[in-house]
Length: 207
Image (cartoon, rainbow, N blue to C red):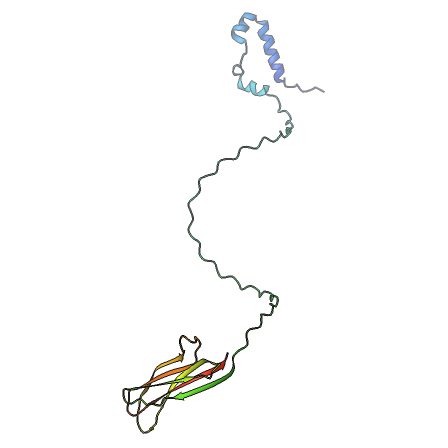
């Protein structure tokens, strides 16, 4: 059985070519057939001379280097412009009622109040005619002071039509013997017809 002819390898072709150049003389080879660049080889032959692609190499990761020193802190930037005022927030929910505080201490006993409060009244002895005035004073008993009072009037004749006006209603103070009110003073004017008598009332109590 005949064996099939093997195709010469690219290395064999280059070797034969070099042998041919060597046999023809060094002068000619140096001048005309010295191969110094792949551009001197026919592209089809150069393609055959290209070897098979080698296996992919393994990637090796190097060790992590030490951490570098911390850099200096940069200078503070300029202050920015103030922003616009924000809207008022919604009202929050009412909080829970707090616990009652402790009971306070009992206060000191206050002074005793006035006793034997009595209302005294007096009516003027002179009446006020139309356009006139009537004055009366009522005094509290000795040892008591006036804590209040008022003014009024009396009509001696109910058929007449007087128009009384209270012009004065003040505590009665005998100055300078005492600074506490000892009674009440009333002045009543009559701007109508008939007669009007002034009446004064004093609320007297023991201090």
